[in-house]
Length: 332
Image 1: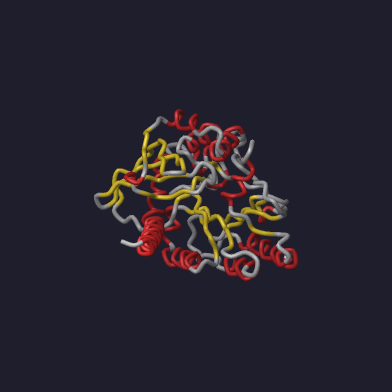
Image 2: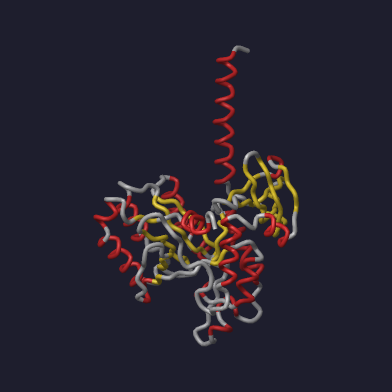
């Protein structure tokens, strides 16, 4: 075989390899079995990954991996990696100097507050925010204005537009068409979604005090709430991230540590718009996209309109939550 043919064949194999990785990332895992927490180190030159989960689907084994430098997650087959299983404490020690582990430790340090524990802001290079929209169980349809408006405002300067969506298992089950619409926006490269685990049931009581409400309700199976949501994401072709948002932003110290033991970083907010909190540079902004909070959505749209010129000049941008958290902990 001459050199040109060999070079062309290598090129084709690289392209096919890239396509295969893309297909793996977007797959719908319909027959998940033995889904469990599994920690370890996985290496595929030149990158070290931390293993978070292990499962089987139609006779094949898969791992959920996180890049501890960038907080990117992916699903892949273990055969592509050199793998070493580890206990959780061993894995955290091994990766202790990475932005991922530093973010976990910061979330644990901020675990005492009963409301809004976890990471509340990132440190972007320019003035801007990370937008998070919660999709709690709701009988109302998705508030699509959020997504169409941010795309229309940012399409000339930032495409796809990054947004983080906190999704519940119940919302996914009740709103398959809305979910499909969001996936279509992502496939068209109009938005880029980081999917945040927001628990499966998102139970709430109008009467119970905060210390016995939401995930603090007595009898809550936290393992079910976390892992069933991840499985539902995978079955719907979504990529679970390493972020978790507490329903109602309510937690206690014990619950925060339970969540970080799953390898998940609790994400709070320093700007819940419907409560009148104003975003600053680097804010993690919270609105509800499930149709239940038109005030917050209206406030966000007004905020966008007020920033039209700054957006056009790339002086006010939306940031990928993973990148803004990653940048905060780089070099520390």
